[in-house]
Image (cartoon, rainbow over all chains, first blue to last red; front, side):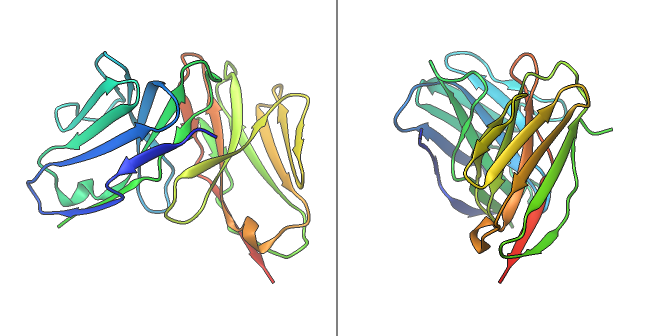
Length: 117
Length: 109
């Protein structure tokens, strides 16, 4: 199956700093990438959808100035958590939909566990 | 009402048991349906797609009832390795994907 990688897998940062998370599709071109957040014992919550070369579409309640998404190429999307606070501590997961693949199947990255102290 | 609802469980079953999970969705215009499996502190992985005609893959059988807006997953002959959280996933028009909160399964020896 299609492979999606994320980096870093785990990050600890101090309150007020910014953290960048990378999501890469390794063996396919991803026309659309999704960013999710998952708190313990809760479901994945979609944060935003990004299409290559265009601005991301954010879900209601997600601050676009705080969670900066860049989808610069068909294989790379980045999420930057700016001025992180302890309440931003969560499991962030990206997924990608491949060009030419099923319109409804998503391939997930392994996730990034962010801890803000 | 949540757009996708699942019984959170946990379901505790012995090895070899048959277990069934249910999921309901509220949007009658929903177009595609999936079951994902998520292990603790890992990303979700696609288990199988769900079709109106039913879909079987080894010990796993998925069913869709559009009239009742209901999806099911049946696991036969449970293995210890089946222990995980099973996520019901629904895609609506515009390709918006909605995840259920998941049903936790523990299979015990």
